Image (cartoon, rainbow, N blue to C red; front, side, top):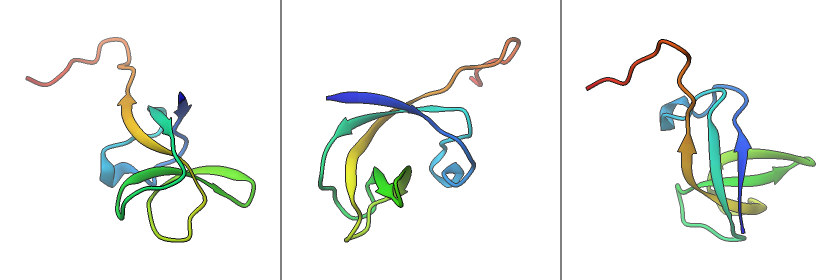
Length: 75
């Protein structure tokens, strides 16, 4: 099963994931060190780099970013 979540906040900017982006998540209960995962923390969902002991609910498999009207892609 795959699902999407909207990112709220700026804690993932070092991974090029910005506030307002959508992440695609594949259901999983395990991950490798440093892998980007969705976890359950204190009854809330959060996106984090995997570390042992986390309650993983999925692995991030992609990102979607909507460009604002008038924005252009570099290149």
